[in-house]
Image (spheres, rainbow, N blue to C red):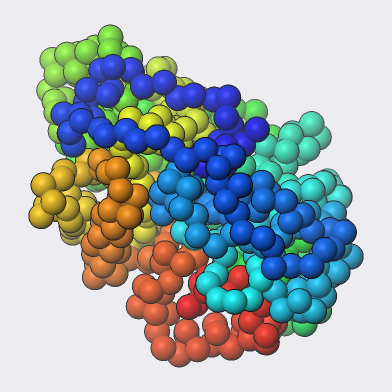
Length: 530
């Protein structure tokens, strides 16, 4: 079963080796564990639902708690402490467009606010109930999860929007195809959620972002159905696909989508290169991108992330070998790690590997096949489980991300990290911060930053510290010309910074589009635009 107050399946435990825990203690201090609230106590304290009965709606407190929050650190603090605040008044589980239309009618009749719910993996507050007196209905689309059509001639597929990543890939793989969209939340996130938040997969360098894969679909809005037919290309006015992409549930509920698929690759391998320092690694990365080497993924960790990855692996002998062996050839404590993927036909994969490693070696890179690349691949969807273990040891871990042009990265990357390192100086607390570049583009790259700090026995203080950290980093992102979100979306956490990117006219245009489809403001209020 999926955890109600943390990441992933209840039965999966990410073990923390004693040496890994000592690394964290050395970085930020000894953790201060405090017990979590029990699910039974939280459900017992749930207030009565303000919604009337409906055959599609559960008012069971257990369902209302399980579907109340996402995966942001603020959500974790609320869930783990049991101080969740507002719960949805009901959770619906539609199985058809007709059910969704009935729920929209029910929401209008009851004055309810309606929250679309995919996999519950939002890290920016997309699915949290808003304040106010109006009742709240969460609509979980998990039962709308089927492959409806596969057009092998056009290499397109039609899925219901509630399909989770593993089920989507399984349905395609058995027929010899893949979508190729693998965000870190892949295990639990859904196709509809990917579209609504403009998701990006780890291998987008080959497969593209979700906007490159989304070809059409069906949206049930308060004003009626919006159909986006699939055609290969169109010059018929503005593209309405881009109203739906990133709409975060404000227009309506995406119930099905047509997506671009491709045949399963014959080769899909991952490799690693160590560099002596960041400047060499960054120069190599840019050259690889400019050469248009046909890789499927590039991910460059800075020195602290490289060291943290080694230390948190829990493999002491491997860490010693990496330190001692690399040190002997001049790759010391400033070492940086590049992971790259090659995917496709064997001849193309060999060419991609040869091009990438040749460029890396020109910049002093050491190719270290075959251990680290496959290790990363094996753990790419299980790494988030470490967050559960760290919390139980008394630590809070969070991530944030942006994307910037190449020319702005050298100044922005250290500035954002320094803001996080010093945001809690007046409390005497230290913050462990590390970063990587990923999701490369010809004109720039995304930057993904992880930070860890000690939580306190007081959930309000833990939340206050998170707010200070998040604010300090977000202000630096905006100051350096980065997007406030490259892949996580806006939700509530990023909404205060959206105007810096869109401008006054852009904000008013977006608000006007939302009002057109939802004039009563019943769809996921407070998200995207406050």
